[in-house]
Amino acid sequence: MPGELPPAGATWPERRRRALADPAMRAAVAKSTRSLAVKKEAVFATYPAAEAMRKRAVIARRGSLARVDALLDELTRRVEARGGHVVRAAGPADVGRYVLDVARRRGVQRVVKSKSMATEEIALNEQLENAGLHVRETDLGEYIIQLAGERPAHILVPASHKTRQQVRALFDEEAAACAVDPPVGDATPELTAFARRQLRADFLAADMGISGGNFLVAETGTLVLITNEGNGRMTTSLPRVHIAVVGIDKIVATWADLADLLQQPALSGTGQRLSTYTTFITGPRREGELDGPEEFHLVLLDNGRHELLGTEFVDILACIRCGACLNVCPVFRTIGGQAYGTMYSGPIGVVLTPLLGGLERAPELPKSACALCYACADACPMEIDLPRHILALRRTEVERGMEPWSDRLTFELWGRFWANPAGFRFTGRIARLGQRVYVRDGRLKGAPGLVGGWTATRNAPPLARESFHEWWARRRASRTGS
Picture 1 (tube, rainbow, N blue to C red):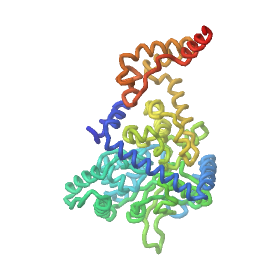
Picture 2 (picture 1 turned 135 degrees about the vertical axis):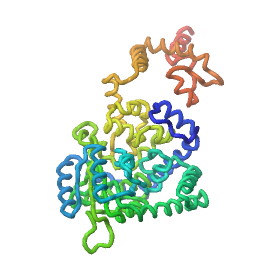
Picture 3 (picture 1 turned 90 degrees about the vertical axis):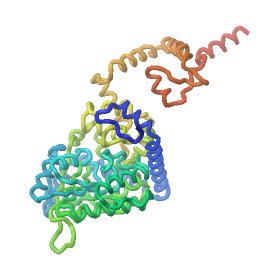
């Protein structure tokens, strides 16, 4: 049924088919991504300083990645000097153990979370809920996704695939479960008002707040949060304990570097000159301050990032999670984020998921979830060569023999035939003969095998009755004869 999530463990073809059969989702994703892409173009066109700033930001990110360990050491000293706690976490289990240890020590029962792709990456919510904690996502999009029991469909706009009517249905169910008044309608202000009312109670009752982080400034030990909703500040200031889970790749050296980077997620992601809220956190509440947590913990997440340093994939760590590549990707625009089966979707997900989780985890993504149109490379503000990385991952799959035998056989035979002109001409003649059964109204329809994947979703023209070489030879023969 349209709107339903594919079952756990569903294959890539099944996830893809379900997405293609969901017109409401496809329309919602197409509308949101095109809107964001247009806004990005508009803001760069009307903001002359943006391009020069972007180029400086690229240099800053590359420079920080070149000395990650030294900068992390400096950051740790600065944070601890201001009363914060810093811990290095190799993977998901390490983060979960540390957060649960803090929660048990402080008697935490209820947790509120600001939007964080890092915690999605390590399934932190599931770890905490399995331990008996109540966890509430407070970003509006993440709140919707949590109620739906889904993964984020977009790095920046988690619920971009949902219509207002679908959101209203989720909120009605939540209202019934909590015995509160449902939204009065499905207009955006009415839905937002319901979410605000529900989340305010969670904020006031929470014992712990968990956030991610857009950047970490080594120079001063500062956590930087960029948001468009006030939930980020509520999450980090109201609860007694604040834990930030941030990838080690988010480190920057100085405030001068940050000045160039600060606008980049908004410029390329949402077409704003600056996000609505920019928050700087340098530790727990100090004496005389009116708000802020009693404890501040910074968890530096590795989860495979260190292994990418010094490799051909190192520039993938420069990603600022703006979502610009998703907004221009024809594959993402067609099938949405849920079909990828991972928390990172679109071109960045095609590369990042296999690199962080192992190529065996999602071998289908580099091979089948990219049209190599190079739109993502043009859109990326950090100049990450995503198409080159996708080709490298495809090459690795071939070298490891990870392709199905049927694919290997098909392309091996194809390569042998097309390695010489005679073979090329022979396959053309065979294809023209074979297509006759499937040509209807001047178009290929219902073709078998690999060709069927193209004709099922495309208005594919048949092969011409004669090739250019055949036409040219006939033309020359007729002129010679005359």
